[in-house]
Image (tube, rainbow, N blue to C red; front, side, top):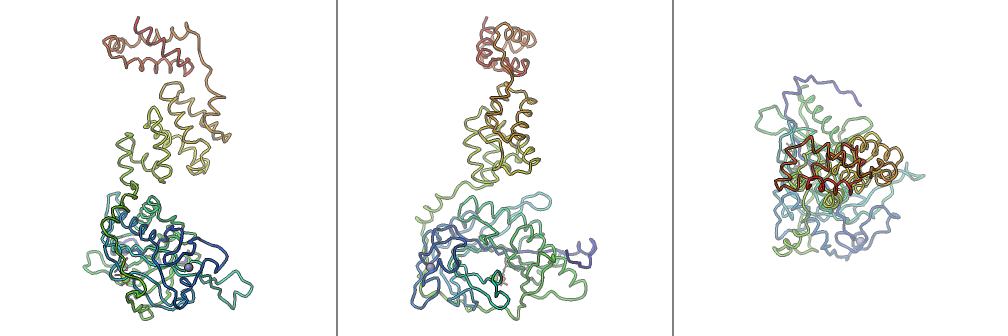
Length: 492
Ligand code: ADP
Ligand code: ZN
Ligand code: MG
């Protein structure tokens, strides 16, 4: 990490950081935004191109319907209002990887505005971060500065990415710390992944973030001058970059200087940001309406159709699952980490004797073992079906919690799923009528109240006796025989 004169906590505490984010998200459409070229990461350079995305004279753009649907889905998912008639504009600038000399974007009439994302602040309290706007645009190509024998003297251009559909999601300057930035991005990514509009793969550039950072004295009425930290490619680095930038700006002000409005780049190796271009060098994009595309109309009927494709979003899903399965917020967070896992959990839980027990088992025993083994949920040697089986056996009393833990340990040690381990190592069954009856007698004798309840007509109390005898037998009583004998004894 680079050295920066360390500012005392007392000095840092005088200032209020203010941050707003601009996030670019590539949409997972089959083809590009305005042409039929495949929308796919990688490929031989300059093979996923056509006259339109190469910007050859006379080639005309045709808007991809799916890109509009994904943009609207993303917008609804972050609570935006949809503008029924939005307009594409040309954003003019010269850059070698942008052959048209402009980018098709949206300017004063974006497709969506006025949304929000809820995050938790430092104190764990919910906080609403405004989403100013979400607009559609196209991506540029890539300049390749290394990897070739003559890279020292040449830059290579790959235009495969030109015309990839993007949405840009701009937040209000509502964020107040690097941690809130991290939270917001985590939430946003989770929401986008649930909607399925993007894979949000940061290494491949499917999700890119610019952070606008300023500081002001606490209690000040006006925000300070912002600097924009561009293109940091992981959430952790963005957190570091924002932290660095806050301290840098406070240092500048404390030294009697002024923060200048500029774009800065994060250098991860050095752990600092440095100036890229100042406001004086800022572009004037000369936006004007794109003459080759008509205004985009997304009427009520189409909006309703798109809305019907919106899945239950993570926050709502967690709340429902907490109520439905009587699980804790923490359990719910683990289970909804991805939509795919939440779907699988719910499908499995429906078949389980106690979904709550399945959830608990995942949250406690499974998560702990995964952490120890350094594995992700998807890499678990014990499948969800295995967990359901284990939970059912625990629920019926056929497995003591001690035995259950031992079997899970074996599963992890041998990388074998639970059912196979259980079949091999399960407790020996006691199928001797006299032995089972003796244990039933013991439990009946110890629980006169429950016996009275049963004989008074509450037949469900039988399960209480089955469970207790099962435990007494250390899970070894033959369950079918046990069920039958309990009822016989209680009825006699
Ligand atoms: P610009 O005109 O420089 O593009 P915008 O007002 O469009 O600035 O805002 C761009 C982004 O910068 C938004 O995410 C917004 O929330 C954020 N932003 C604006 N002003 C500030 C500020 N003073 N401090 C931090 N972020 C800011
Ligand atoms: Zn093309
Ligand atoms: Mg702006």
